[in-house]
Image (tube, rainbow, N blue to C red; front, top):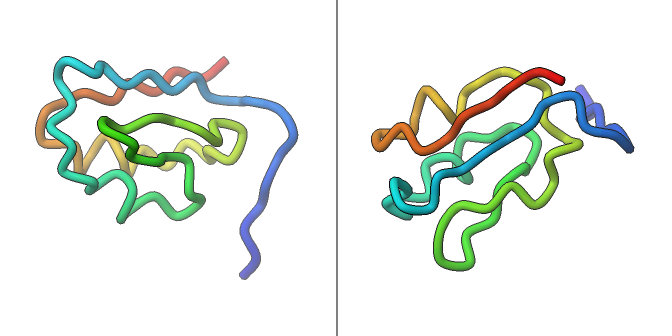
Length: 69
């Protein structure tokens, strides 16, 4: 099944850089490549987010917050 990609954001994705421990679990588990990891997790493609909240489930440091807009 192809990935559904949008041109606009439906979810606001916030990563608390102070809490992020750079474990890369959000990058590994995100089905639509929202995050990249230069030093800490960064939501570089928030428009791809489909609201599955997998990233928040695997984040041991609770650094990711997703809000529907």
